Image 1 (tube, rainbow, N blue to C red):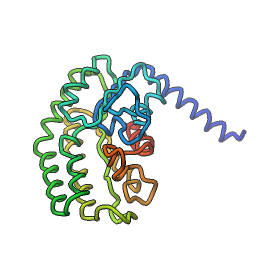
Image 2 (image 1 turned 90 degrees about the vertical axis):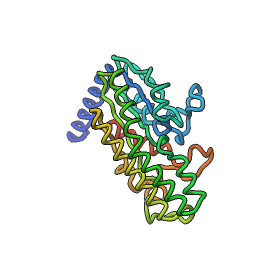
Image 3 (image 1 turned 135 degrees about the vertical axis):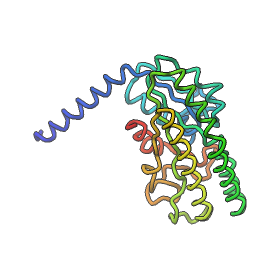
Length: 258
């Protein structure tokens, strides 16, 4: 074996050993909505019911690769900020050292906006997007603050990673069917508004914001590369969610590096 190959192997061995050793002391809790639960990526855990938690979701992939001391996976499809407060934060404690979360998209009416944009006129779509942006800018900040302050209170020793949402569409992409670029641009701009609000509130809480827009670039619906997001699909609740590639190659590396 060449000396350079041996050196590379030793470096990788040292890296994975160090990662494994550091993960031994990690108590990880995965909170959030369908993007954290892994809706759209298949292989759902039988005990997760309508929450549709997947073994292909980035939290599950991370714990499989790192073997933390404990792992509590409570993210749930359809979750809003109130659901995190009412049903998920009880998984946190002073011994929690790592937390991940995606939240805010359902509060801002993501699902309803997508339905309107797919099924209705351009003006209806733009009106729905505008309403969602207004909610994100005016109402969501206080809701996020309550979630983040509760996480900090219940898990004061944790590194908290707040992940954002990707653009859904590549504008001018190769799609033949589906909605036009005006609608697609508006939806992407709404994601920017939502991510901007989330990033600011996360920073104010002292948390890490993990932006996934760049890594998904080219892999959006109509993208020039392998698509990491579902368009309209069946089951319908999996539409406009990351597929297993989006979780493994999009969300997982961004979370792992945050």
